[in-house]
Image (cartoon, rainbow, N blue to C red; front, side):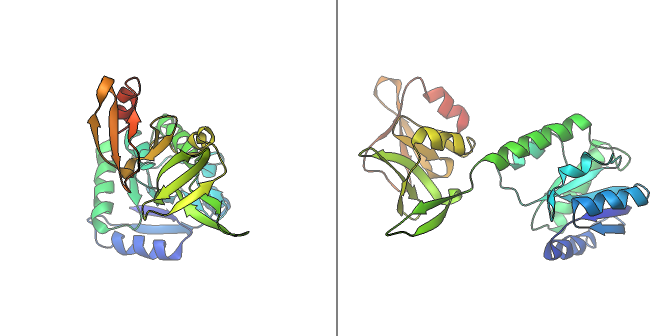
Amino acid sequence: MKTLIIEDEKAALRNLKAAMKEVDTDFDIVGETDSVTGTVEWFASHPMPELVFMDIHLADGSAFGIFEQTDITCPIIFTTAYDEYALQAFRVNSIAYLLKPISSEDLQKAIDKLNMLGGTGARQPATDLQALMRALKREESYKTHFLVPVKGDRFVPVSVDQISYFYIDGGSVKAVTRSAETYDFQQTLDELAELLNPRQFFRANRQYIVAHKAVTGASLWFGGRMVLQLTPPTTEKVLISKARVPAFREWF
């Protein structure tokens, strides 16, 4: 199977090639590119391959810029380091993908999915690719890190993945990490709600925004409300109003 690999990380390229040797498919690598520009030039001077492995983040930008300049008519398997939330975009749009680091087992599953979707002669519908691009652009617009002030004039980066919840304490917004560290934030909870991925964070009430990974349990409370158990534990009850309970159930 004549195959083009679009990948800008040498280690990831070696990893993919090693996995390709272990699956039940005869790959013939006809080209390797590492940028949007280089890929567009490759397609302009070579016949269409039978399969493309495409990393999404390339040296000079998003791989989706390739589709704006080139009509790729062969199947594509995307390779990505996106987290579990962003991967929903691939699943719902029937796109074959591989999550880095790539194993031979995952590669075989992607090839099987490709065959199930129509075989090597098929291509992803344009509507699926467009929907995928829109979904991933939304994911990329959400904050992944905050630069927060500490003692004196120092600032430290805090990963969103490490934050368990945000809350208001005496008029100030604070964040608590999974390791129970507390940081002061300059943004309001309303502003943070716009910056955070709604798949990962839920506005429980006027005082709290909680991370999905921080919720260890929930129980019914008086008046149809719900009380959350979080880790690290909070000093006060985190209540969800009766009106917000259905939204929480759907989110969780």
